[in-house]
Image (cartoon, rainbow, N blue to C red):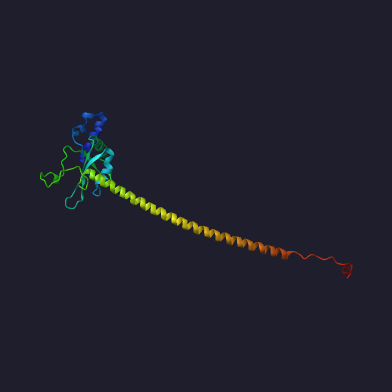
Length: 222
């Protein structure tokens, strides 16, 4: 936490005094394109870290430090940028910010050291490459990540297509059912109307008086 506050104070002081360029404290690290990130949520993986910090520039290396036995994250990582100036953006914008509820520390790395397993000088140890979690080089990690993303998108699209087909099927079924229901209802209504009309006609006939016959003079006298 002290380091976080120190970096904040340095940035605030430079901003207040208008210090930039070679006079800035960032200039002491212009030889290094690496930053250190501390206080990360243990559940975060390399992909998560890259998603956040690639906002500052192209990342060429992501080393999330893990327990060698369990493989679990230790909560801190090192990131290497293609352009050293991206480190300044990362430190200024992400130090003391919260990611997943945790306040993180972001600082320059003066002298980045490759992971311990690559330091031994013998033929059995492969040459160190800027790497993703698979250990086969950042470019390979990036390619695999993109392949997985494409595969995921295809699955999503396939699922959406299936859902759309099912929806259309259900819609057609409901439409046919609705048409049949309306047809029956219309037929019943028409039959009821015809029946009512016939009954009305019969009723009207029964109400009519029979035509009266003129009485003869004899009938009138009697």
